[in-house]
Length: 215
Image (cartoon, rainbow, N blue to C red; front, side, top):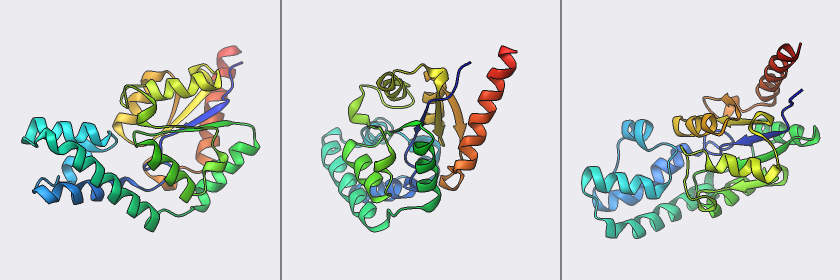
């Protein structure tokens, strides 16, 4: 019988309520050149993709000069870091979820389209690093989400097959990546739904499915 052995988490909107921080930090940088994006565009186009890809879309669709990409990327990361230091704090529900899963023997990874330093900083500030076995950032893969590469990389690191892994995701690009990886999926709407009850409930559903199939 197949059993779930690892839980792979997205970061923004799943473990840390940081989606708004990324939006505000990027807009702060873009506003220097009058290129701020609307909330609608953020939610329908830009949410969950790397900053470099966001800037490329703006160059294609709005004529943002590509020579500004490096500067804008640097400023966006600087503003994001400032906000993380100010706003990112431990949340009881997420600490309880990860500490409980750790005690139960599950392997865990965070797989994020953010850069490595941002992933490490957020996990440290949220007090979640101690529970994670692996952190995968957009700098650790050649193709970020919606490509499944980072989830496949985490599975390979653990030596597990997709049907032994559960991915917890919240946005369209991450959901596409999770489905393409072949892993099981738990979709949450926001950080409040990343609870131990919801995660174990989904694992029980998967176990029940395999038990019925084996019967």
